[in-house]
Image 1 (tube, rainbow, N blue to C red):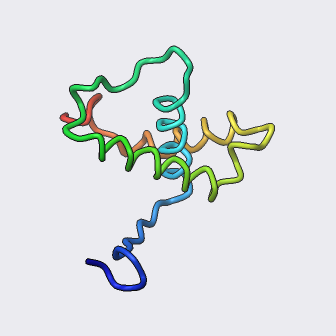
Image 2 (cartoon, rainbow, N blue to C red):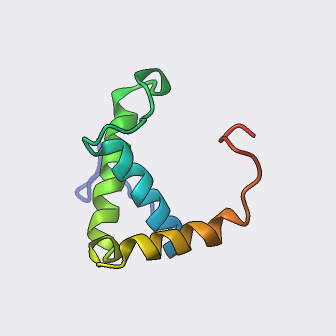
Length: 93
């Protein structure tokens, strides 16, 4: 089905702030901590969960900030910078 190189790849480029905020969101959802997560109704296929888990693993490998002592300060600053461009309170706004 696929050539010797396996399935075709797609490169997704994010700003560092975006990567940090996405990492934290996925960590919250995937972690065992008792926090709100998307319900099963949000997913149409288990493949969507797989993709989110893979994105999380790749971010974990690429980012050094989550392992720094000042991570929460770095994350707060990233959120502040990105929040300035947000319109609405949900994905559907």
